[in-house]
Amino acid sequence: MPLDYDALERALATMGATLPPEPDQWPRYVEQLGVSEADAPMLLELVKSWADPEHFERFAGNDDAVFAPVHAWRTLAQLRVPAVVDGMLALLVELETQDDELAAADLSAVAECVGAAAIAPLRAFAAAAGSPDRARAAAITALEWFATEDTALRAELLPVWLAALERCEPTARSSNAAVVAALVAWRMPETIDTVRKAFAAGALDEDELGSFNDVAVALGVRERWATRNHGGHAKDKRARKREKQARKANRKRR
Image (tube, rainbow, N blue to C red; front, side):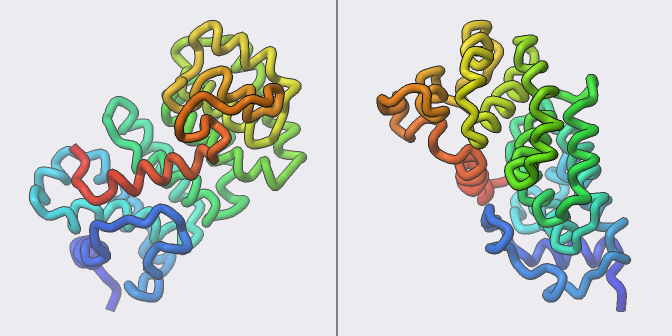
C-alpha cells in the first residue's frame, strides 16, 4: 500500500538521527522503505520542512523525527530524481541566514547521486544575480566535482568564475572562497595573482580557505608547509565540510 505523507514522515523518522556524510554509507532508503519516483512529490514537500521552525517545534526532544527531511532528500538522491536539486537550492535560500550547514554539505553528495541532470540547475543558480552568497557557494562546490571529471564543462565555468573572483565583491566571500577551492582542486597555479588580489581585498572567507599562504602552498606556488594545523586547504574541502556535518548531525538544529 502506498504511503501517505504522515506515514512517509514516520517511516523516514525511523532511519535515525545518525547521518553518515558519504552516500555509500547512507541507508538503502528505496529498498527499506519501498518508495519509488511516484513518492517524489511528497518527499519534496518533506524536504521543505527543514527550513520550517514549526517542524522543529513539533518534534522537540525527538531527534529521529526532526531529521526526517534530511532522509527525504537523501531518498530522492537515491531515486535520482532531478527535482531534488532545485528543491535543495530553494531550501538553501530559505536557510541563508540560519546556522545550518547540513543541507549545504549534502548538496554535493545529492548532486553526485543524481548525475548529469544536476548540472543545469546548479549552473543556473550559481550564475543568477539574486542567488544568496552561501547558497551559491554550495552550488559552486557541487559543480566543482562535475567539472573535475568534465574538462569541457570546466572550460565553460572557469572564465565566469574567475571574472566573479576578479570583482572582489565583499558580499560574495563564501562563493568566492568556493571558486578558489575549485582552483586548488584543479591545480591551477596560474590563477595565483587573481587569488592574491581577492585575499588582499578581504573578499574571501578565510575560515573556509585558510590563509593566502595555505592556498599558495596548495596551488603549488610555494613549497613550505601550510600554516594551519589541519594542513591548510591541501585537505579536501568537501571532506572537511562533511566532517563538520557529521559532528553536528547528532544534535537537533537550533
